[in-house]
Length: 88
Length: 253
Image (cartoon, rainbow over all chains, first blue to last red; front, side, top):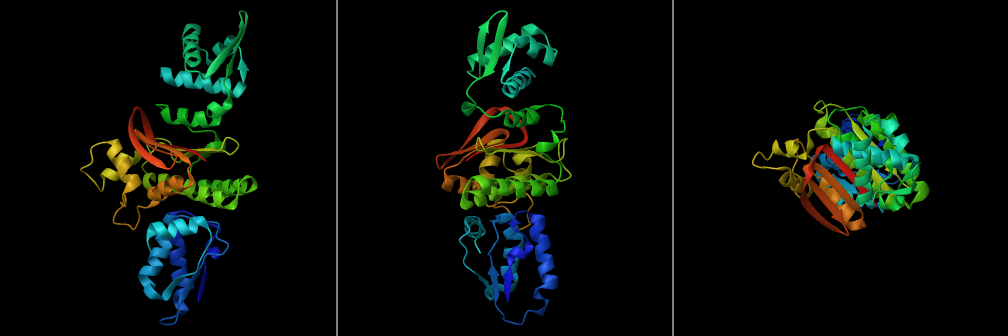
């Protein structure tokens, strides 16, 4: 499945927003996920990603789905810098 | 208190551009001798100049490029004030929701003036610093809840301040051995640690440091009696006499 982060907003900045997004995604997006199905994380049209949001969502996603998670490349400098700093 | 008055006088002169001593005395309602002493100090510090001869004397602020705009100065004054007072609504974010809405505006305003990469990174670091204030002080502010947040994009400066617990109190919860503000601020900017352990967090200010160093932007981030200064891709930590309540972050990009 393709996980389009733009559907959570244009500025993905705060911890509560990241936590809320994670809870929502588990309830409504991953409930039909097949075993071993890839989750392609798409950053298109996300303007701002901060490490706080990323830790609450992407770190949890990676922790739960491990190798199933694939981060699609992004040219956005805040996406690149946040992914580097949270080391996932 | 003396410093406070001096800064208020400076802010008043910057706001009004050219003012007579009579206007200043009347506006502040203080003893004229004290006002003239402050004006003398401000001249010595190179912040204002005196123009004309009695009885037609005026005070002017120096070149605006050399100093912060009054709305930025007022952020410092707000933080320094002993009594917590509500900031003007245009710079006050009492809740995270208000801050988030203003962050959206900041991005839109930046995109009108600067390139996309600068706008995205600047919004990301401002978001981290502002959200950090809410993360660590919710329900625990000293007096005024929320943050003072102002962006002067013409001067390319942004100020964020809160009257919260400050970095030392936050870090000491998880590193009880630390002894002072400078140790705390150094840890906050350089080590992966969370004041809200065991939650998965603790990268916000490291991210801020990294972006400022990469972009060559300037940051003065003060808390308590310590300051983190980033300039020309170098980060340093220092003690300062002035006590900052909570935090003040002045960004120059």
